[in-house]
Amino acid sequence: MSTNSAIHGLWLIGLLRLAILVLCDMQELNVGFIIEGPAERQTQVIQKAITAANRKLAELLAGQPHQVTLVPLIKRIDTRNAFAATKAACDLLMNQVITVFGPGSTPASTPSLRITQKYSIPYVVIQWSDDDSLQNYSINLHPSYNEVGRVLRKFIEEAEDWKQLGIIYAKEEGLEKFESLLSHFKGEVIMRKWHTNDMAHKYVIKYFRTTMSHFRFLVDIPHSEIPEFLDLIAEYNMTNQYYSYIFTDWDTQFLDPKTFAVDKGANFSAISLTNVLSQQFQSPPQHDINRQTSARSRKTGADSGPEAASGRESLTYYLLLYDTLHVMAVGISRFILTKSLAIQPPLGLSCSSGDTWSQGPLLLESIKSFGYWNEIEEFVVTKKFAETQAEIQKELTGQTLRVTTIEDTPF
Image 1: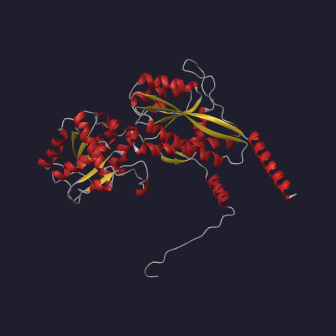
Image 2: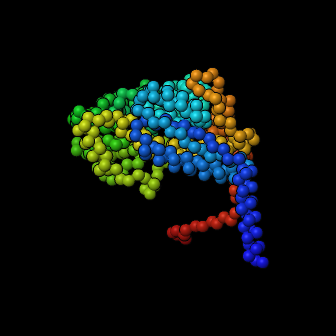
C-alpha cells in the first residue's frame, strides 16, 4: 500500500512539473555582440556574463508565468574594419537582437552605432566617445573626455596643487580626453611621446632627468608597458620622494603590486572605473609577463598603442561588460513587471527597412531606471526610495539577522 502511495506521489509530482512547464512561458531574447580580433577569450567572458545575467533574471522573475533567458549572438570582425562592422550590425538587426554591444575601436563602432540608433535598438558603447548626437538609444561604459579632464584638473590643481606638469603619452588620439585639463591648467606643461618601437622612450625619461624641469607626471600609456616605464624611471633615479605619477590606463590597478617595488618614496596614483579588487579576484601576476611582451613588441615592430596593448584584453572591460548585463537583466525584469508586457523582439527589421523598434526606448528607460550621469548634474538617482524600501522589506521578511562584534583595546 505504501509503495503504491509513493508511486502515486511521484506521478503527481511529475504531472505538476509538466503543468508548470506548460504554463510557464519561456522566451529567448537575442543580445548582439560585435567583437574585433581573436574571439576565443572574449567569447568565454561573454558566455559567463550572460549566464550570470540569466541567473539574475530567473531570480527576479521567480513565480512569474513569463520567463526570459538571454542568448548571445556574436559577430567577429577584423580590427577597425568599418565595412565589416556595418555588415555585422545589419546581420544582428535581422536576427532580432534587443541590444547590441559595439566593437572597441572608433572606426568600427561609429557605423554600427548609427545603424542601431536609426532603428531604436539599445546600443552599448565600448570605446571613448563624445558624440552626443548619437546617444539617444545608447549606454556608454566610459565617462566623456571632458569629464575625465575635469576630474584630473580638480585632482591635480586642488588636491595636489601641482604647479607644473609633464605629460607622457602613447598616442595622439588619447590626448583628446585631456583637453579640459590642458585648457585650464595654469602651470607649465611639457608633453613627450612614448614609443617603445624606436627606443625613443628612453630619451623621454633621460630628458626629464637631465633637465630636472618636471617632477609631476601624467602618464597615458598602456598598462602592459607600465612595468618597463617603472624600470626606466628607476634606472634614472626618478622614484624618490620628489616625484609623482598619475597613470590613466583603467587597468593600472590590476598590475601585480610587485611591479611598483622600484618605489623609493615617489607618489604613484591611478584613475579607475571599478572598485579596487582584493588579491583573490585579480588576474595572475603580470610583472614579468608584461616586460616580455614589451620586449617582443619592440623586436617585431608590433603596435604598442592603447588599443593594441589592452583593448578587449582589458580586465576593466570585462568587469563593465558583466555589470552592464547585470543591469540589463534588472531592466528587463522591471520592464516586464511594471508594464505587465512581454518584450516583443524587433521583428522584420533590416538595414533596408524604414521601421523602428517601438519598445527600444522603453527598454532603455527601464535599464537606466536607477539613475544617470552627466557633466552638469553629475550622478542623478531616478529610482524611487519607496520602491527600494519595499524591496528591502520583502527580502528581509522572516529573516533572522545576527549582529557580531570583535572586542578591541581597551575593552
